[in-house]
Amino acid sequence: MFKTPFKPTGHYVFDYKPRYYDERKERLEALEQRYKQEKKDNNDSDYEVTLTKNNLKNEWSRAKSNPVQDHNANKRLAKIIVILIFSTWAFFNFDKIINICQTLFSSFQTMLQTR
Image (cartoon, rainbow, N blue to C red; front, side, top):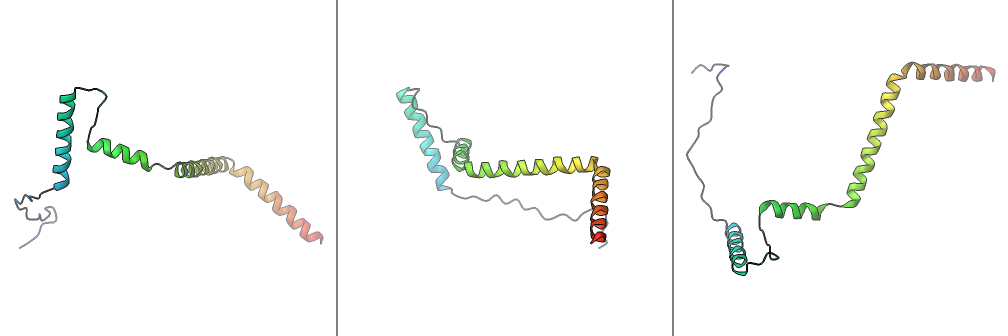
């Protein structure tokens, strides 16, 4: 009836285990077993086929890499580094920048007054 602020209300947990049939997974397991059996029968070290999730993922990521995208990423990174270097230089030399701006402003004012 009264809810306490220190104890969160929990959700109901049911003991439900879904069961489903994955045809693709069974097909891959059958292929893997067949190739392993052929490898044992042939005893050939040149014939190597592995069907694992990591190998497929590595092959896919290697095929997806694009040199143009890598080049654009490198250019973007170089721009960011230049901006960071300039901003740190401006931060440490702020008083010099202010003096330069003041002299430019005063010279601009004198130029306008002489006209």
